[in-house]
Image (cartoon, rainbow, N blue to C red):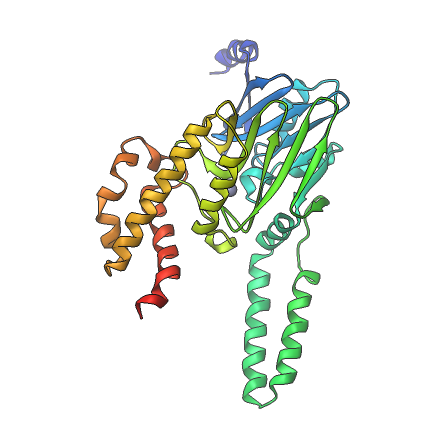
Amino acid sequence: MKKLMFPLLIVLLLVPNFVLAQDAEAGNKSARILHKKIADSLFVLTHNNTNSVLYIDKDYALIVDTQTSAAGPDLLQYASRLSPLQPIKFVLNTHYHKDHTGGNKFFYESGATILANLGTHTNLLTSINEAQIKTLNQERTELIAQVKAEGNSERGQKLSRLLEKNVFENLEQDLEYSVLTYTGGLNWELSGESIEVKTILKSHTSEDTYVYFKNKNVLVTGDLFFSKAYPFIDLAYGGGIDGFMKSLDALLLSCDDDTMIVPGHGPIASKNDLAQYKRMIEYIYKGVSMDYLLNKSLSEVKSNKAITAQFDAQGFGKGYVSTSQFIEMLYAEADKKYSKRQK
Ligand SMILES: [Zn+2]
């Protein structure tokens, strides 16, 4: 084996457009980062079907999303190689998920400023303090019950408010980097590009940001769009199907037929692909809702293959979210929406 390693390494180093590196989380498996130049000074960097976007301006470069913590160091190295003269000064996160923010600390340590929407920052903190927040919330509920039982609800409410306020002040863990936050969006005027950064509420998560490179007509959607795969709706972190549909409308409005769309996961797409994606979700959600209103159980809806057959045949259920998981999410949303009406 050892004899083979050296020539193999040379061959791999000579092959353009990808690097191989060690992926600690995957247990020493090779991590491959691919890059694609999609416009002047604009690159898509892909690892494990997840996309980051690097833009190189006159004086500095910025990157949208940083992949997992395992791939982060390689992404940094790869991006720095593509931008040898302009330092990567900014990281922009589309949302809190660790396959988009895991590499933040490596870019931060190399001198970059991390930019994220305020809600994304809150989600990042909440996700690393999940267990503690759960305990604090439980304590609060118990305290309210206790005080109410004693007939002193005013004191209970006051203490509960205090406890709520203290949750974020008493978190056990902090992020390993600082974050510059904004709310709603940003307009970023660079020497060679004008970038529109906009946040959408209650869609894939409670707050997601998309990035539009105006001059290049490139739209970076984060996980508001999984190209050629069913979407993930993070119901535990404030995501929801109604918001998801609204976010797709907003994305469609911000692009034209020539826009190049970079999804959070999957291949680069067009406005037409995005419109079809929206129709697919609408169609499946309608099917699930109809079955729900006919009092079908979750397992009955799952066995109604007609709802997803045409999309399953195109491989949509082979992405991060399986057909069964997607139906579960939509069933939970239909339950939230219609259960009151039925009673
Ligand atoms: Zn995500």
